[in-house]
Picture 1 (cartoon, rainbow, N blue to C red):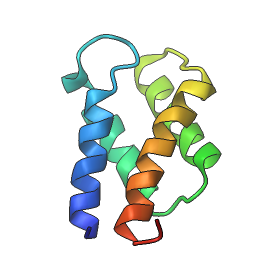
Picture 2 (picture 1 turned 90 degrees about the vertical axis):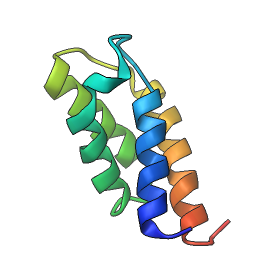
Picture 3 (picture 1 turned 135 degrees about the vertical axis):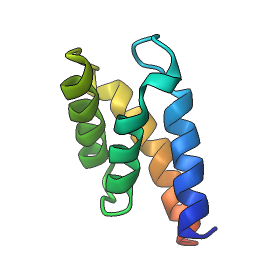
Length: 86
């Protein structure tokens, strides 16, 4: 899997995730931020903190870190698959 496909798949995962139940189409900027950080981060906790902070800054609502870690594992699995590490 190449980087473009990984980003596309990661964006799809993030768009499907609707932590505030407001409609996934409202998370455009946050999805872009998370996917950009996915390219440079390799640790689930670090990526989860990016997810948590991005969504909290935009919506003023806190997401439990555990939920962010769950989604970060899915994203990192894509990344490692793209790098053929798995």
